[in-house]
Image 1 (spheres, one colour):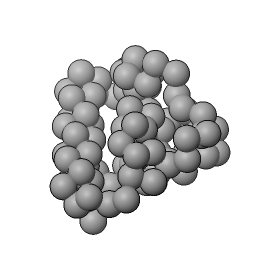
Image 2 (image 1 turned 90 degrees about the vertical axis):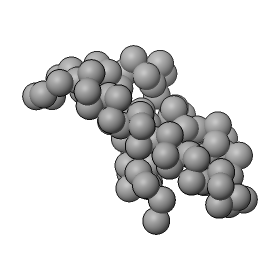
Image 3 (image 1 turned 45 degrees about the horizontal axis):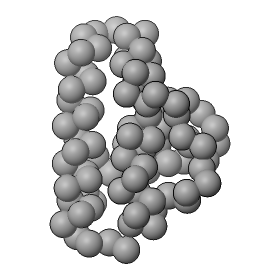
Image 4 (image 1 turned 120 degrees about the vertical axis):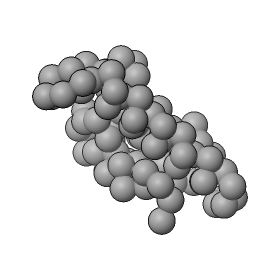
Length: 89
């Protein structure tokens, strides 16, 4: 399993369900690669302004939203790089 895959998998499920969650924001941010690799349908509705929405959602939780945002984005980038490296189509 790729690093951060659990977040992206949950996010894709949340997008299909129309839920706006932290994970759905991450999947929306990764949508170009997810679509390119055949993991997400082009027709799924994405979270508008996913980066801003992610930060707003994190601000509603306890803790440092800025640090958590950066941590989640780093995990997402690791996932995307692993996905590209594996060449899944």
